[in-house]
Image (cartoon, rainbow, N blue to C red; front, side, top):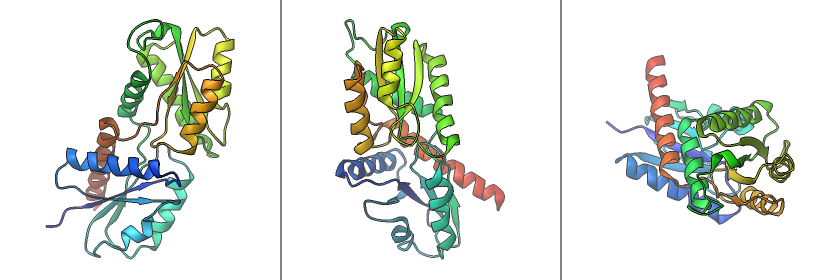
Length: 248
């Protein structure tokens, strides 16, 4: 019996670092689940597109399409369902976005620790004197932005940071630079920025450059191909399969 196909759909970027990161993440997921038939697609800016990938799959295969997106917004609510409504494939399930998920907080912790020195006055493990800006892409969908704010509150409660403030690279306020400046103005001894993006590109570069200019002590890179993100992918894939079988 042929295994279910996982089609992981990323946003896509003209920056080649982004598609390379998605390829690395897919390779890591395959390592963690041997025999996984995982194919990647992009919503735009890079090939292949979702219709192109779906067109390579045999009609009798069972397929799960998984959005490699950190919040549920327009792309996951409208763009991808519109494509799926037109596919001739008969056995297609649709998975949830990667976020929110507890493992993504672990991934943020990992990347932030990597961005900070392990000892001295700038040490990572000084949460009571460190405020964090959780910098996401931002969306015109208020529910997506509210998800980031809720995630910031959970992260602060879990780790004991002095504060964790949400910020958005586009489409919403405050910007990462404004959030950094606000925390410093309020008296935070040190402010660091956690980049809540899946891959490097325009937004990640913008967050880094503007936050450092505003006085951030450090800015973590995009989550990228780390074990926690790969495990979230596999978890969402398993959930989608379970839901489909139950519904059937």
